[in-house]
Amino acid sequence: QDSPRRSENLVFRMLAGIGESALDVYHAVNQSNDETSAGSFPCSHFRSRVLDCLPAPFIDTIRLSAYKDGDEVAFVDFNGANATYLSWFSSTRVLNSSWADLESAQAAFEIDGRVNRHFYIPYTDQTGCDNIKGWLIVRDVSAGTCEKWEDKPPYPVILYSKGESLVSWNSGSE
Image (cartoon, rainbow, N blue to C red):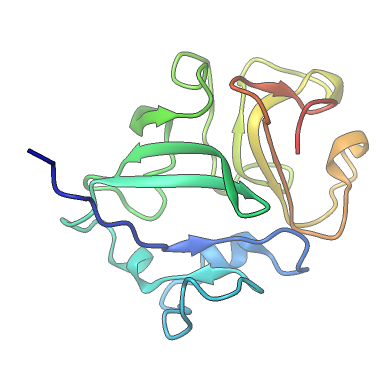
């Protein structure tokens, strides 16, 4: 017997290179784009009012996906039960990921991040720009800290590991 198909709904979308802060849109409580079709041609960030309803009994899983040319290239599934719009993004809630080493690694998860790095999943044991490793970083503005890999306008810049494991940001990211 087939199991029931789970429903998936877009609640937030960020786009690279459009000159608008993804973090500001994410934190815009009580503001949404639900009137615009979530599946329409993406030309701006998208925020659903569902984020303001969390925790919600009908949400059991939250998926973060990275897309390139319309194809999902990386993902992390989080336990969405009793999650708020901030607490879901946590190492303790990871259920599954395309990055095989994410669950066993010392990964930090930070929506607000640090040094203008948002939706940030770094490996926690690191110092200096040449040694920073991780899985995902979103930059909304230039911070002038690690110019080799962070200052790539137009913003926002979305960097993610292309492989199945963490990557040094000096090489191997998209």
